[in-house]
Length: 129
Ligand code: AMP
Image 1 (cartoon, rainbow, N blue to C red):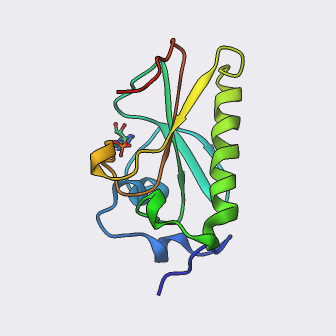
Image 2: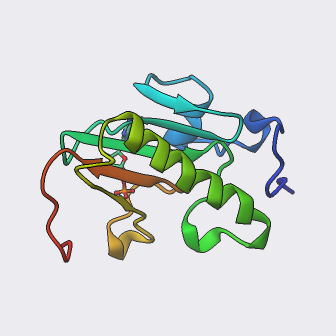
């Protein structure tokens, strides 16, 4: 059984085989990191949809928001705060930015390791497509 929300745990033990974001966390494939702490990592999206497009992910493998549970409460807060920090440090606080979590293939989720998109640097329309 995987530990659910163990700060400071051995994330390599929790990595899902064949999960591209677990491989980024483990340093097995390259990414342009912009932020990391003991529980979260943020890196630039390989296919940016805005001048700034960063993904914030937990080190721990959680397939989607729908897979998160009460044990992840603190972690989810940490991810949001990391997103705000990334946006602030990227100079987006004044101009505005958007955080997005796609949950499930029907909503556009293509990588099944929970991630927040941080998008900014251009006007963002609402509603999204
Ligand atoms: P989603 O469609 O919400 O699951 O978002 C997945 C995002 O991950 C997409 O915006 C992809 O462009 C991005 N992505 C996939 N592989 C990589 C990678 N190796 N490095 C950075 N971003 C990636």
